[in-house]
Length: 378
Ligand code: PLP
Ligand code: COI
Image 1 (cartoon, helix red, strand yellow):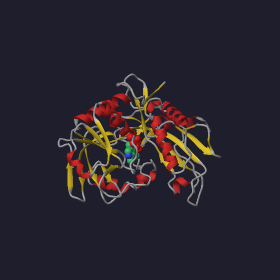
Image 2 (cartoon, rainbow, N blue to C red):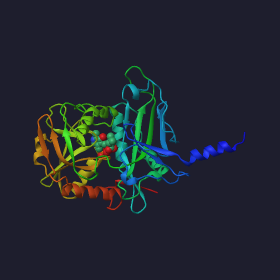
Image 3 (cartoon, rainbow, N blue to C red):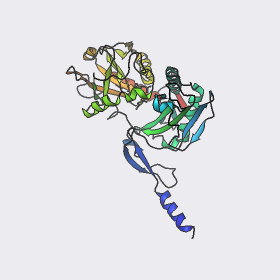
Image 4 (cartoon, rainbow, N blue to C red):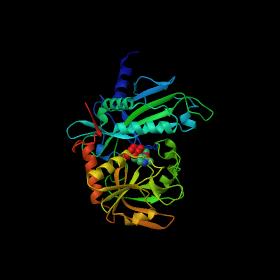
């Protein structure tokens, strides 16, 4: 038989490759056609959701025999692990989230990756996984961004490249013990805003019947179990028409902790107020906003925030890598039948706007990076 029919079918298939965009729940958001030579992407960047889209490469590093190995590059989306891996049974896994931006000057900037490396190290100490050096972490981040450069959304599209480092226990155990083998993998995916409308105020809800994490539990670490614990409350919040759920401290149910995937801040009397709690994630965005608030001449208070204090706030927001700043229009406390309205017209407050502009300005290289937060890729 001639070679021609095979060649013809190959061309047909090759001519129409598609990229499926799947959200974190596995639901397909849309199919995207790649062009023939895969060099140009036909993506509607401005309408991108916060979801998963396959990219060209991920980078991997294995921990075996007590040491981290060489960095490997893979174009495979799946990983092959033992059925008794500790990440599957005992939740020995951690992840991080950070972003890379295509900037006006044509350069690519990554925000505070060293801080993510340090937070991952803290998580590793918390759930007995081997720490990865800041140097190796950053090398892998830079490599995966560079390798997937064509997936970094254009400047001013409102989208950015989300970077997801993941560390999992791959060694087999049946008793509850840490694994002796691990995989660290970093993938990227272009994303749009996490909360609807981007920088526009959204309603949130306190659901008292669920806790995300215990006062001395794993809330300060970025481990998957915290997110599993939030799924039900998050679904309930969405079903009721809210952007996201807020948790109160699990012990006294008196103080604001955080949202399912973002920290909380409030503004009043020229003061930036954010919760001090042993069960919330130390957000790098929040830490940055505290510094920027101070730079803008605001007082910064990190302390317990009783839920009733919401009544006195002039502005409030949820903040995080995915959320950036998501201004809060109101927080409803369902069980107490109370609604704390913060922005009546749904518009972000002036200080939130200033903080947002300053943060975005630094991330996009349009404001001086006086704190050394940004890595510019060559
Ligand atoms: N809190 C939780 C529970 C999160 O998942 C996130 C997201 O990473 C944050 C806060 C914000 O942290 P960061 O600003 O470091 O992204
Ligand atoms: C982030 O903001 O990076 C997060 O991790 C949120 C994520 C759980 C969607």
